[in-house]
Image (cartoon, rainbow, N blue to C red):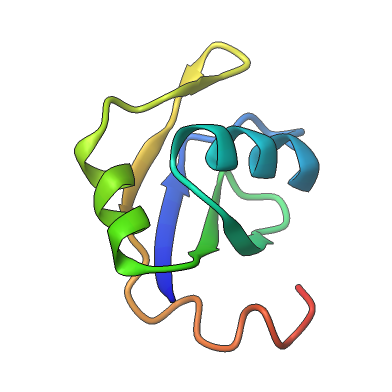
Length: 84
């Protein structure tokens, strides 16, 4: 598993909307941790290769905002298991 930081999110983005975008541009999403009241989140991806694809590609837009991708480091630890 690998963790992707996604920044510059629109304030009212939904889990389903973000999941669809990431799965269509990067690969399978195991879990998403949307930070309440924040414009960033952490996405747990299936493997390091998907993270490498995300970091190498041109950033997608969501609702007119260009998203920022970065390595999430340790922020996804246990994400799929804790139900967030």
